[in-house]
Image (cartoon, rainbow, N blue to C red; front, side, top):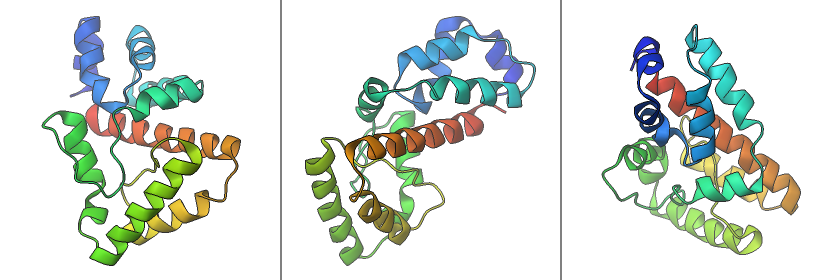
Length: 164
């Protein structure tokens, strides 16, 4: 969708147009309320500024829509399709790498109580596994900051690909 069209949509339709970027309705509503945007850079800057405000509750809310890295992503909605595309490197990985990611995911979830979140787009399966293993050494606060950073990166990439 182009920016002019996004700026002109009714609020509900505009929110629906960006819902796949992140499952945080308050962020969606705030971004829609900030329209009209003069250019895509202003849209991205506002989206990032709003995402910088996210705390643990927003992370929990957003993770409800994120599959585990390496799992087969089910569903026909736009978010599921994006996740399948973004995680394609892991889906194509060899069996040993997939098993290592599965084990790492389980360890991560036991340690931090949530799924491992990483911007998968542009990363190989080996890079994602190495990042998971590195982040297992984080304390809870550091890991929350890293997960929020990854969530912002995912959100901004999806927004950039959605509105031009």
